Length: 162
Image (cartoon, rainbow, N blue to C red; front, side, top):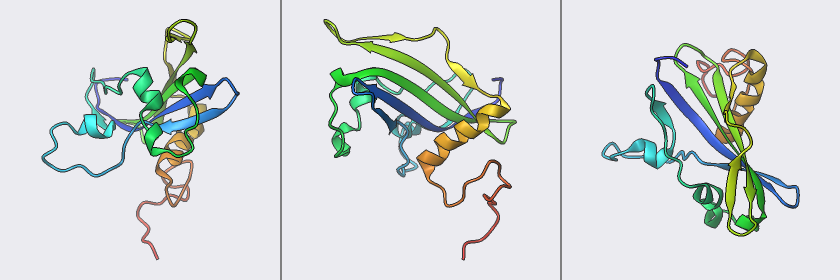
C-alpha cells in the first residue's frame, strides 16, 4: 500500500456452518482504554498500523469461539464451522475511502481440526467498485447515525445534532 500508516477501522470474521448459515462476528473492540494501557493494539485490535506492522488476532479457534461466551445465540460448535472469511477495513493515508482485504479458509474436522487457505493470496478491495462493500462492513460495525457513499453523502461530519 505504500509507506503511509493505515488505520484499522474494523476486523470481522464470517463463519460458514454445515447447516448453510452465515454468521458475522466482530474481532475489533471499541471499548475505552486508558492512557496507561501498554499496548492499545492488543486490547482493541484496531488503530494505526505502521508500514510493515501487523495486528495479532489470535488463533483461528480463539477468533471463531472468542466471543461465544458473550453471545447468547451462539449455539454452534467449532466442529460445525466449515469455512471462515477474515476481512478488514482500513483507511490508507492518502485516500478518504476505506479499503478492504479478505481471505477465506476451509476447515476440515476429520481426525483433528485442520484449516486450509482457499487461495495463497489475500484479496485486496481497493477499486472503486469495491468501496460500497467495504463501507457496508464499517457501517455494520459502527452503526453510525448517518450512512452514505462518501463523506459528503448524508454523512456531513460538520453538521450539529439537533
